[in-house]
Length: 471
Image (cartoon, rainbow, N blue to C red):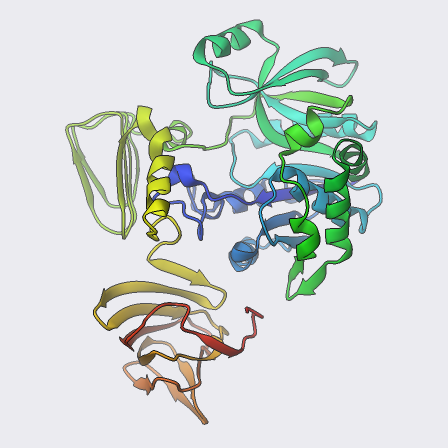
């Protein structure tokens, strides 16, 4: 029986602001290594015997980033399912289960969040094999992390009677995040594990349990797959059907209800990297316990995480701080207070600001652009178009554009004229003129765009044609 990894790549990761944002959440960022969290998750089981290519479930707005990150590591996913709206984990797993049953009636699915750290990969795979033996007999297995201390930021699973010959245990109960004294009692008891949010079960068993306990959700998710359709390399769900599904987690919807839940203890060096302090803990620091990334200068600093994304960051005479710099925001917080970062994001939302939504560098399927300067009636951007990348054929009502090629070759359509521009050449796109930019070369195209006009918002785009089928 083949194991199908199902990678859940939703969520905004607001507790890792200002690095993680809605348009580029933590699972799509390189937090621990040079590879993103999503890439690390996909590579963890790549090449293992009996393990299929992963099925990724993500939001529509992240589809091109997910596809590109899979391409970068040489993994051709079994599919990329696009959620039209967020409905929590139970519906996400349900549409994946229905999708897999259309491929393999006996499919066994390994559900993995895309943003977890697992240091001991061989131990993790050994736990997967234990869980697979239990799932073969119809059990719904979850992975219980062997606690390293009384953590109050995780939910817990209490294990009950051992399942003979498997290394697993029946689940007695799931417990919400406890206070410190309760957590200490759990660790001392020895039969409580951190709830990892990872699962392994047969697709048909999950759907049967979901139908029993959440029939409306089961019906909506089945209809969402029955009405799915292809969009380039993606699978779009029937939007109305999926949107009608109740929103709930897999724990509440199924695992806390089923009589067949089992837990497999896993001592695998796990973290969900749910805060800046957690990210500090899972990385190896210097002799003073500092974890550094980027252009950083320290003097008499200890126990701190300092991350510089775009310029030098100098920190002097402090301890136990988190300092994170991006091109448009800086966070300075004590490690004991990082859970309050979410309040910053809430503040930005309430003020209708954009720093929680996207960075100054914005990714598109054809490449990316980065804001350099903005003022009254003008804006300057640095644009990179990947080899073969093609922007939509479009028009603007309120702005004109000047393009100056820095390197590479640009194929420019302006009205009925098509020209090739190379380094140090430029062109002008008047207001209201239909235009398109392409990179016909084998190297990235870099150019500077100067916009001028009465309105410079990204919504001033009328698309006529688009190879990426965006609205």
